[in-house]
Structure formats: structure tokens, C-alpha cells
Length: 534
Image (cartoon, rainbow, N blue to C red; front, side, top):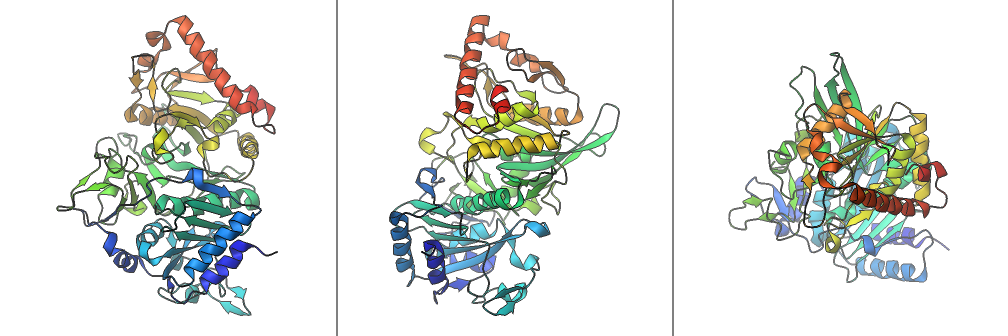
């Protein structure tokens, strides 16, 4: 029996009403009826669905009758519909360039416009000619803007079909054909993650690496002896933990000549066995909640550009005035910001060498602002993926603690396979230093919120870690090292004895250990040294 996803793609690709490969200006024009133009002359849109549909997502390795029936009904529905199709490229490095084709119903042209701005235009690259249907088709003729080119002439690596108006919300992911059907959602993040989810799976199965839900940057600092050092950094974290904020932050570096940062990626990178990391996207899809120029100057600058695209952000209908602090639409407001318009970016999205890996969590009791981990501990915290639920995931559970392996809700395949491979890569690259970074509150208890760990605290602590000026002390309960002194952050205010008596601290420690160990033990094939690290 054939693959129903591939059969559907063949039918959809043959639709004579499809508008193919329009440029950004034309796509924005097609979406004009949905646009509210901001005071900055940028496009702003409001969606019906305002977060990812994780509960409605199925990984379909072996289609069941219900999947086959759904795909058949969608195919029948689309045969007379006007569609928009655009092709984009993920990754810049030659051996990793991956072509993705999106089909979306014409009514939702804004989704093609937004998603198209996140990745690279095919015209930026030259692909080797590929033999299809008995003839050679070059990249130039394949993707000429406005051309009517079908997948029968040139097949993309991944395909996404989005039908936002479908009566039922369902996301069907077929790793065998690298195809995703998005039904009943007009949230652009769903399309973005469809491509990235498939890319991470592709990298794991075809390249032997690991796709990570992580940002990447270079931090350049002077050590106490005056030497200028450059550290490649990966930052893990779920939405609303501060991953993008810290990835796209300058750490207030630059007082010493030569210091600074280079921002590479804010969402997904591909980690290789040799310790290098490949970037995936051209632009950033940021959370705009409470965005302001003091704590997040780089992202704010990008969000007020005329080339930014806002989604579910409060914009005055009469004046176009943008209010990033008004969350009446959703607290998951988003913006596509242009990477090249941000300060501290360059022409690369890759890291030749990863030197630091940072797991960002957001807890409220005894987790310190920063801790240094050995490889087994790092693999354990990779598997724990501790955070809090955000409005980007499940708005009804926002703020509640949760664990997501690799802080990556888009893993295809066994979770323990990811943790074991992560440890293998760390062991093969002993120069990589790993850290746990808490961006929540320290010392919370009943009727007391605790001490907020600010963006300034986290940004400066990361710079100090890169510089090598943090003073460490081994924690007798956890085995990892806790920073007790920093250049610019008073770590004394985060001393547990300030908030808890000894009995309460012991109780909280035991509860957290039991919770973490119970989570790790559920992964039967996980390396036992990872479980023993907690």
C-alpha cells in the first residue's frame, strides 16, 4: 500500500489554482485584508489560534484508517481551492541546506508571508541539478519567483500543508515522507515548528547528530590575565524562560576593548559529534510580552523595525500604536524580527565549536542562580528539561512547573536515545562546560514570592562564567558546583539560609531529588550514570 501523505501531496501539487513562489511584497499584498499596519509601518496580524497545538499533534509512523480518511477528506477539499505555495531553505552550510515547501489556502496568505521571512530564499543558493521525470531542472528555473513549478519536476526535502479553516484541529506528522499536515490552526508558530521538528529528526537519523531546541551565540571576553577569549554558547530553554532574551543580549559587554557578543540563532540548532553546531533559520520569532528597550534592547530594536511582522500584539486600530505590555489578546504575542537588523549579528548562523552549554530553568525555591555541571549531570538536566508551562505551549496551564526532555517538545523517537547521544557528544568533547541557570525566583515559600533572579543577574553571570571569574563551591546535597561569588552580582542574597531554616531546606531538597529521580527512572534505556547523577 502506498503512503497516503505522498498520494495527497501529488494531488495537491497538481492543483492548477495554486499561486507559486511569490516574493515577500506580493505575499504581504495578498494578506492585506488581514493586516493592521503599525506606527512603524510594519504588518500586524491577529490569529484565531494563539499557541501551538501540542495536544492535537500526532506522529504517524504507521497511518491508521482514521489518518487515511482525514488525509483523503483534506485532499478532496483542496482540489478546488486557491492555494499559495512557497519554497524556502533551512540552514546555510552547504551539506545541510534543506528545502521546505509550504502549501496554505490563499485566504491565509499572511502565514506564507510570515513563515517565508523566517527562512532563506532559495535564490540565495545554488543547488546541484537533480534528475526528475527524465530531465534536469536547475535551481534557477526551479524557483524563479512567480513560476508555476510542481513537485513532479523538483521535490522538496520536507513539505507542509496548512489548512487553517479546517473544522477540526489536528496536526499529523509523517516522518517517513517528511510531511506535516496542519489542520484547524492559523498560528504561524505551528508552521515554523513543523519544519524544525522534521529537521531535528532528519539530523538525528541521517547525520548522527542531535537537533536541539536551543539558541546559539558567541561571547567574547577578557580573562583576568588580559587574554581575549571567544566562547561558543548554546542556551536551552522552553518559551518564557528567557532563552531568546539571553541569546539576543549583549551582556553589557564592551567596556574592555574587544569584548562583545555575536548572535547566531534563537531557537533550533543541530549539534554534531565534533562539537560544532549548525544554525537553521534566517530570522527570529520572538515573544513580545513586556518587550522594552532597557532590559532587551536588541530585541526591542528589531521589533519596531518596519520589516518586522507582529502577531497577536495589541495595536491601536486608529493610530497603529503598539503596546507590548497589553496582553489582552494573549500573553504569547510574537514578532518575526530580521536577524541582520539586530546589532551583534554577522553573516553566519553556525558555531564552529561549542564551548558552553546552558540549561535555563525557571524555579521558585532552592535552585541556585547558576551551577556548573559535569557531563553526567548535564545529561540528567537535559533529560529533566525543567521549566514552567508558558502561554506558547498550553495557556490554561501557564506558570505551572513541567518537565520536557531537552526542553524540546518536538522530539520524534525515543527520549532516552536523545539523552544518551547528548552524553556521548559531551564525552567526545571534554572542553565543553555545562551550566544550570535559574531565571525564576529563589527562596519562595508560603506567602513569600522570594528573590527574583533578574535578566541583569543572568546575563552578567553568563559573562563571568565565560570569563572564568566565578568562584565555585561544591554543593554537598547535589554534587554540582554552585557559584558563591561573582564580579557584578551579589550572590549572597541567594543564600538558602536567608530564606529557610535547616529542616525546611532538607525537606525541599528531598522533595526535589525524589521528583527528579522519579522522572529519570521512567526512561528504561537511559544510561544509568545519567540517572545516578541526581
